[in-house]
Length: 326
Ligand code: NDP
Image (tube, rainbow, N blue to C red; front, side, top):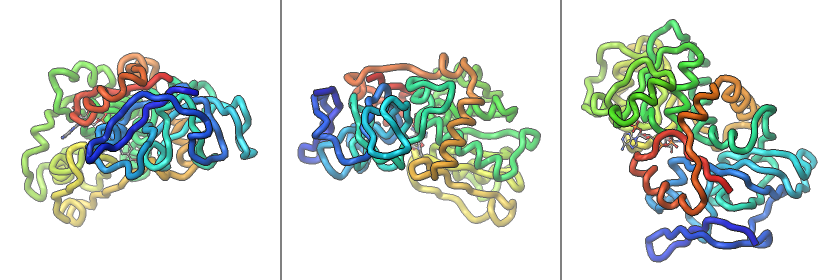
C-alpha cells in the first residue's frame, strides 16, 4: 500500500483526502513509476477544489506532473531505475496523476530526466516552467529580439509568470512584470530579473482598440481584459505568446492590433506538445535558469498540505512554484 491524494465527488462538491492505494488500483499503462515529487499548478488547484470542471470521473488522483524512477516497464524505451518526468497528456485530469507515491502511465507521455537534473529540480520547473519556456520560444520564433523593446509578463508572481520573467531576463530581454501584488512580490520579481513592475489594475481598465505602442512581446498567463489591453499596446510586428486564463477565458479584443500593426498572437500548449519540442524545452530551461531561481521562487510542501495550497492557488495567493514532496 502507498499514500495518495484521492479526489471524490459528493453531490456537486469535490473532496480531497489522503488515502492508501495499491498497484492494482492504478490505471493501465506500460510504465510504473515511483514518484519522488509532483508540483502544484493552477489546473491542479481548479481540479482539487472542484472550481473548474477539470475532472469528470471520480475517484481521481490529481497531479498534472511528476518526476520519479521507473520501477517496471513493458516498453523498450524505459528500464527499471531510469529517472523520468511527466507533464500533461491529461494525467491528473482523466488518468490518475502525480500526487501519489506511485503512478502507471503510457511510455509516450514520459520524458527521460535530462542530464544535471533531478526529480526535485524537475518539479521546481514542472508544467509551469515548461510552459514558460515554450512561451519564450514562441517569442523567439516570432522574431522578437532583446533589442526590440520591453516584454510584458502578466500574472508574473505565478508559476508560469515567475519562470518566464527569469528566463527572459537571463536571455537579455528587458522584462516588465505585471502583477496584482506589487507590494508583496515586487522585490522578488525584481530579483528574478524584472526591470520594471506594472500594477495589474492598469491593464484591467478597458482599452481603446489601439493605444500607445509599448511591448515588443507579451507572455500572457491571465487572458481577458488584461490581455486585450496589452494587445492594444503592442509594438508594430510584436508577438504575444498566450497560455493562460487566470483572469478568465474571454478575450475582448478587436482586429485592430493584428491588421494595423501586424501583431502575432501565438497560442502555447504544453499538454500535448510533441516529444522533441518538449525534450528540447526541458534542456533549454535547465540551461538558462540560474540557481538563484530555485532558491528564491520555489517552496516544498507535503501531500497533506496540498488541499490548503490548492485553495490558495485558485485565489491567486500562491507565489512562484510549489513542489509536492512524496
Ligand atoms: P498561478 O496561479 O501560479 O499563476 C497565475 C497568476 O495570475 C497569479 O499568481 C496572479 O499573479 C495572476 N492572477 C490570479 N488570478 C487573477 C485574476 N483573477 N486576474 C488577473 N490575474 C490573476 O498559475 P500557473 O502559473 O500554474 O498558471 C497560469 C495560467 O497558465 C493558468 O491559467 C493555467 O491554467 C495556464 N497554464 C496553461 C498551460 C498550457 O499548456 N497552455 C500550462 C500551464 C499553465 P499576480 O498576483 O502576479 O498578478
